[in-house]
Image (tube, rainbow, N blue to C red; front, side):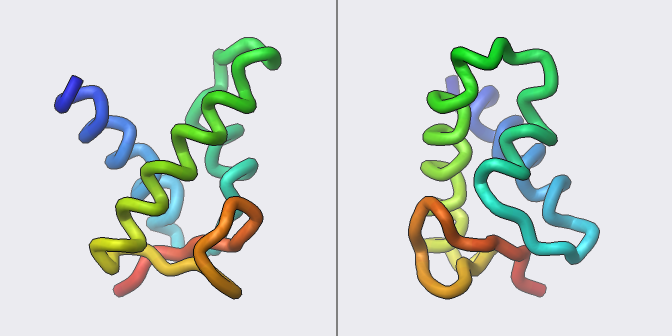
Length: 76
């Protein structure tokens, strides 16, 4: 479980590594490419949970504030 969580975090950070900000939906589509459409809402919640953690650790930031429809970017 820990390895899977770390792997997903790595995928999220890689998707943000080009410097372009992204929304939860954009990140989810980039990461969950083979996921059936019916499961995308759950995948978006998972990505958002990771982004909350990353924002708390000051690895990403959210604009205008930390919420599901924010735009996220990697810090540094």
